[in-house]
Image 1 (tube, helix red, strand yellow):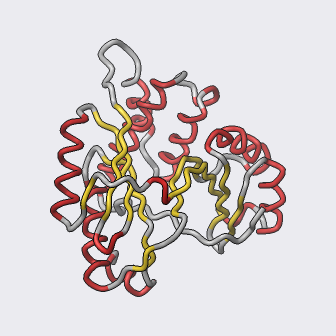
Image 2: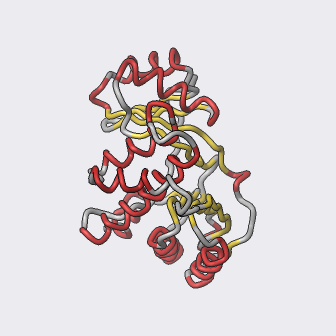
Length: 246
């Protein structure tokens, strides 16, 4: 097992302002509804629901909002959200994967295609082969030393563990996510997050105008109500990233 492989999963979420938090809670609410509908509404017997609830609590989503989202999955009039995925290229040739939940596929596809075109990208090119689909589990660095977490990751069945000053990021095969997370939870308690991610195999350097246009595109995609997560395979200097995401 490699303990120090280098990669970054690029995800843009909105910040702490009230309106942006409301949008984030709305997106998490959809994920909770879909997870609860796909299995039992009890997180102890529904690994997908349990992982989404961890993410919701991490950002202090109100309890009543969580309960309301779970109830939406019950009954004949429950909203039917479908999982959708769009692929394409952004400015600088950067590969993008956009994941979402929607109750209207045609509307969402049209909107996402329009956003790609408006901001210098093109939807439709297959790029998933440039990424690896993984299960990812994250713990704060305070729960264990890097060596202790690496040992625990091996015992739990994870494939990789990266540790920084802030977090321990463990990855595994998608089918193993629930079991690995459960094994780690017995030792360290609930993780900060447990989810499926797309990890770029290689990065595309991007700077200057292309970098600015790319961040604008990703931000616009993330701002769409039906979009849950945006992944990209770009590499950008820390100075440029700080400037564009300030």
